[in-house]
Amino acid sequence: MSGFPIEYASRIKTLPPYLFAAIDEMKKKAIARGVDIINLGIGDPDLPTPAPIIERLKQAAADPKNHQYPSYEGLLSFRQAVAGWYKRRFGVALDPASEVLTLIGSKEGIGHVPLAFINPGDIVLVPSPGYPVYPVATGFAGGVSHIMPLLKKNGFLPDLDAIPRDVAKKAKLMFLNSPNNPTSVVASKDYFKRVVAFALEHRIIVCHDAAYSEIYYDGKRPASFLEVEGAKEVGIEFHSLSKTFNMTGWRIGFAVGNQHILNGLLKIKSNLDSGTFQAIQEAGITALESDESLTDGLRKTYQERRNVLVPGLQKLGLEVDLPPAAFYVWVAVPKGYTSASFTAHMLEKAGIVTTPGNGFGKPGEGYVRMTVTTTKERLAEAVERIRKTGL
Ligand SMILES: *Cc1c(COP(=O)(O)O)cnc(C)c1O
Image (cartoon, rainbow, N blue to C red; front, side):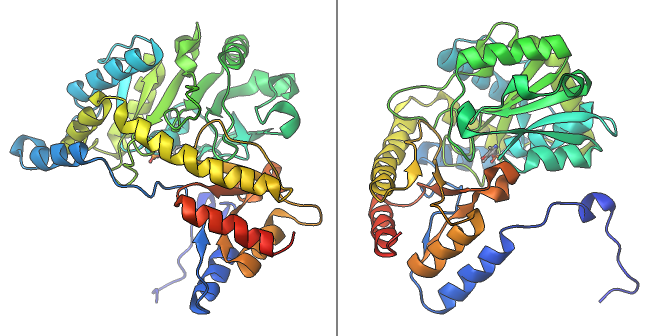
């Protein structure tokens, strides 16, 4: 009950409709009927945070010096750990004091960055299907999203040549995401080189989301955007400890790269939040300084699961590629279905929850996203159930 009609601001009223509401409803009904649901809709690791990271948090949480407000930009020791990890992993040198910024999860930084650079009416280049935060954060800043469709014929990468010249000229900022959610596609260094040239020509800030850089398969490590010459002059890269170390609930990530861009983001942050709990940053240092065996195990687990799900779906005649990275499987729906009707079919006939591709943007229509954040046994069972629906 409200004492008067509560009116929402137009930035909320114009949010895109919540496409998953209908599925949530169907899912609830199925659970109520006693259906044993296999949930392939969740983008959240099912495995626990490694023990050494938890131990470090316990110790750091008991230290009173960590109980006060942290610094806005983050502990220098955490930023040094980031720089060290970056050097080892990508061969890129970063100045921890000016080229690394701690975030409360990368979503926080991605959501705030348009506020630092976008004036009302400014254009932001947004890949679609994609992480919904890119267009929503653009809208919150008063900007206008120009959609870069991710199409199969372009290897699911934005076609830079397809961006009209007047749009490119006016655009202020571009979001990119490799390895990609939801398609799992990885951009090559060559592709990043073209992005840098494009950004320099049109004076566009590049914000590359690399949340899945450590979830890769067959030993093929995705490149960082900053590995390419000139990248640090035009952009920043977002990273997260969430997927790499099963730390989604901890809320810690970081942005690296161009110090002027990071400074803009810091100005916004210092007026809206007060940094990341220092004990979590200390635990983050343990994560970043751990040896590769920690993440090797995770990659092995996802790879085994992928190797159950994808060939299983292919044998059923579904059009789907073996993902080189991330924990998503991007499946074309069979003829006669839409994203929505196939999602409904999977739930009703097989008790499987998937995510309709158009929920990530219109160009995702015709696909569903499945995740490998559930056990091999359950994935095998999912394939078997889909087989029984007789597609
Ligand atoms: C999960 C995810 C993130 C961010 O996660 P945080 O937990 O906020 O660090 C960022 N981008 C994409 C594409 C994601 O899927």
